[in-house]
Image (cartoon, rainbow, N blue to C red; front, side, top):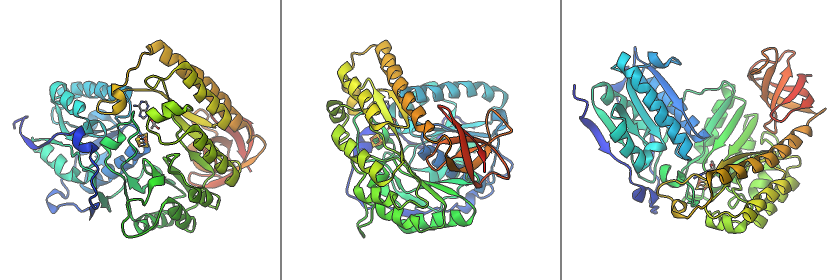
Length: 478
Ligand code: 5AD
Ligand code: SF4
């Protein structure tokens, strides 16, 4: 069989991915062409996932599709007939790790020449990735992006029949309902509420890799959440790149993220979280919906990126530090005790030491209880990749380290407030470092290790906190 016949060859185009037209979103219902049914029987797959919750959620769908075809999962790499990398393009180092892994798999092919290796997710949406795959990784047989997960049956079928598949669509995207899902966790579930992003922050590749903002219908989301509750799931995390823009694309109704929270507040699911929020689109109605409490958990991830207005402007974030603080103050007023976490980028092109200090000051002012901090990484095709950046690697790391020191001090403070308090924990399983303890997350999303009485995985139990540490709380079940 030839290695070089393509059953599909469509390469990505950043130029097309940038376009936003006013076309209706196409909704469709997933089904498997009878031609592919049982095709995977007797074959094993190994799926590796990198990046954000969006990718974790996509991977659960791809696992669902593969198992519907008859494939079974394996953790043992060399046993797999099909290995699929679901990748992230947000920063250079995430990408390099994947290329390293692809290199490592080349040697498995010597022992097992029939192994099919595929790559999907955000990296193939970039032109440069597909160029590099073709040049240096010709043994990768399946390449597709974020828009065509539902075509997976066809791709594996073609690849196992000796053809190569490259199908990366640079479209704005559609919505496919009813994809089977193989969930990783017995009590917590991801629920996509929208896809894509229209913000175009100047550093970010996501609007190019994931298409335009498009929302699932509230009925489908509510139905999914009720079904999860019925099936025994305790917690859902609503997912979108910018969940606060939920519903803005509806042409048939006025219904936004706050409405969705209000409706889900009435469902039987015990815990609701959501990510990610954009500070500009987070509105008072949403903050008020969070104040309803009940199953809506008191924690929020609200990426600020920088504490300096000039830098925020060049990042195209469309809010000022003052506007951000206003929302933080409202959140603290309406949801007393709320735990707020954030994302911050240091060494954005042109960031001066004074501008960096503004970010440090903001971290102190907000008292974030956690932050993901990153050194700016240029992404081909985004505006900021053309901005001049004069900082040395040493200066960049120095800023990151200084910021992390301040962030860590505040996260510890955020942990200490729970000492001697009783929190409710959703039990995940044995604690990592001490198998005699169980672990889980509190309402405020704090990792709790505790001495159990009767608790088992999936239970919600009351735990008295004895001691707070930087990265976990220690307690005992009441
Ligand atoms: N470089 C560094 N960090 C980035 N992020 C997004 N794009 C980049 C980039 N080019 C960060 C942002 C975002 C998080 C998911 O990743 O902080 O909120
Ligand atoms: Fe990227 Fe900005 Fe969209 Fe977040 S809001 S995914 S940072 S473009």
